[in-house]
Amino acid sequence: MMMKHRPSLLGFLLAFLLAFLLLPLQAATLTSSDGKTLAIGAVVWKWQRTAYNNDTRVEPPDPSHYTILLMPEGHLSVRLDCNTGGGRYTLDGNSLILEVTHTTMAACPPESLDQKFIKDLAAARIAFTRDGNLYLDLMYDSGTMMFAR
Image (cartoon, rainbow, N blue to C red; front, side, top):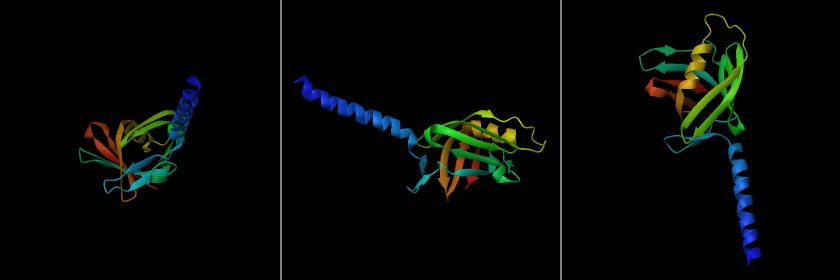
């Protein structure tokens, strides 16, 4: 009798292991309020602005200098003006946590927004899409970052 159950247990374990290994390889996606699913992974997202809830805004002069790229397996790549970096992200539903763990150390010009950008990325908690753009709501309802392709 044990032999009859062993193949089904082995099959279950293999299926579970396969699902566990392939899950991180799936593209990061978000579902908008209208039910449309948008792949946000494998896209270079360019920072357009952050609108803070104290009625201030920050807009980079060149959005291509401030980017995020959500890669498979939770890897994150960033451009911070004159520096590049990387780290990890966690996406669960529309809950998104970005963690920049390392960057190059070039001295950016004084007018650079690199420190503001990295600080806002660390504060991101909710992700959503609208009209093909990616929005990141900051913790404590302090503001919203907007990204475009």
